[in-house]
Image 1: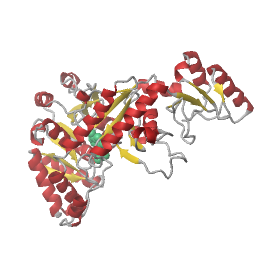
Image 2 (image 1 turned 120 degrees about the vertical axis):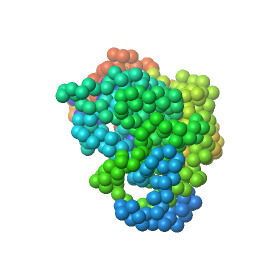
Image 3 (image 1 turned 30 degrees about the vertical axis):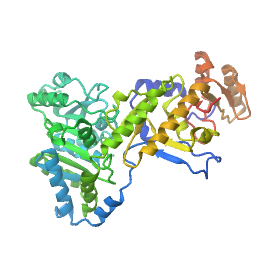
Image 4 (image 1 turned 45 degrees about the horizontal axis):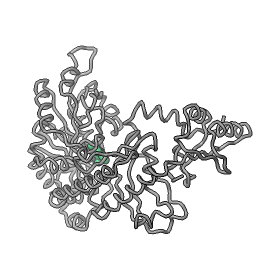
Length: 480
Ligand SMILES: Cc1ncc(COP(=O)(O)O)c(C=O)c1O
């Protein structure tokens, strides 16, 4: 056999089809710049996430000037001020500053589900379910019970009733219902208020509390024009992040009733989330409440600009309907017959020869693969309208180029022995591709199924053209 299988396309495709949402977007990194790109001044537009923002000068000043105390002793005046502010903003009785959204959700789930063998009802695309390491199971003996998520981030509220466990020695105990607003995996969708209220009604009937993962709750509030307290009316508790669209370096707040918050305080300590002079961070959060909330509307209109750029381009490579974009997240579907999400991200993160003169600037756009057929763009404080225009220009150019030229498939065999070399050669022959010293090239469209299978079976190593150190995928987006 040809030695190492870093990426088996067949397996990969099977895996992606089986679990289209489990793509490990956090692990994707763009290809390094080629030698011809190094030293060139690029216009870099980082749209990977709204977590990449840096604190503004005003925010840093507020942090420097914050009154401080030991928050584990509950003596930090700035943390207290932030917690009071969040209680009023959300209409809840108590609040607690925590280091991250993940910890905010984990503490909330552990506080709601005190007994091992509890079960939480939540959507199958919830961040809590997909991307928080099953913290509830690892640390709380809690089992997630998932409900299929609709494209708008909701799920069928009737399913909550169907999935409620009987009081029976065989069953876990249904203990909590979770929601997420805005819904990250569904592309920053704002949950319809009527649906949240409906879930609240069902929860009351079932005597279950509701927790909201409100990492981007303020985006939902700005986009819908509803206050945070109104959005959370049907929810008992919520975790709200400052380190996303609100642009602070660190921090989230949990809000909820008093007795719950006492449990949350104990849990924060045991999880190592008790921060001493945390007022420096709380000051950034207070600053963000004063200066960063209203401006989220700019991020939302920037997201619309990106969606329009793709939509108006009308092409068979990438698609996105502006009406699907509610807030600062844009999910762009790429045509899997032409290229993969990684290939699209890779192409956006390099500048090809001649591109600068065609586009008018040397633009690099950083985005993340999101599902097996989609890429995610996130707008935030640190991207300006000029950046978005540059990103839109790059998108148009890249899409047109791929549309015009198709993709080139580059195959590089990495054989360690004579037998492996023969196998690789056989594979190339099977593909009917043109041979070169480095490998072989062909148009992906010209590869038939039998050839593809042969290719997969032979475990030929595949590298992106021009980026020989990265071993990821079968097709390059270099114009043929
Ligand atoms: C919806 C949602 N919830 C929770 C989190 C976790 O937040 P943190 O990265 O602060 O742990 C994220 C992070 O992106 C998120 O998108």
